Image 1: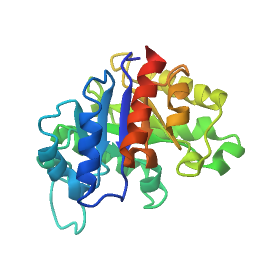
Image 2: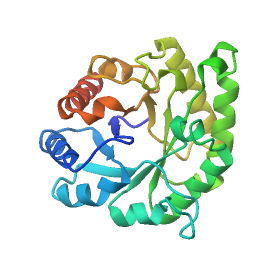
Image 3: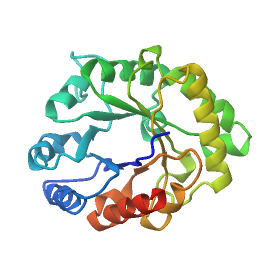
Length: 251
């Protein structure tokens, strides 16, 4: 597992023109950070952030989703190549809000991963169980299935990341217990090691109500190599506090 934490801010469907200044503040005040940092703004801001942060090489940009085709008659969709052209180097795929809100099956996530790789983007693939699945004792079953069906063989030898996000903890203020997180990360790590023969060591991120108050502790849990931050990444000082907490945790 990489020693340098990977901290990713997912802005979701938030951010108008004034959000460019928020990204600028984050960039300026994190110049000395040793953590790997990325922001995933809405697609409408990607090009502007790419220009605004061009001298801040330590802040990477990512898309929040992409289509599995290179181009075509897909009104409202964005291809991986378009994200790359707009300045992205990464892309979130399989986020629970896509899986559940848009009913995306694992097979479609896998196609999107292939498209991302073809365009030269690093995929950040999200997995996680619902509250009903956890309460029925199906967490391991769900995670194994999502990892099996969402991660195509083309990932072998490539750089990618997996984010564990218990669906019931996203935006709810709830957070999984330490034991629940350790258990999930142990399973994910085991599955990835077996499937990719230990050749790929991705960052394993935790997402789900990450805040300045819990960020540092989360990174002390075995297996957790980074954080996928939602609402707290929209406020510059909150996100900067998370970055500082993350670095202190692994120092």
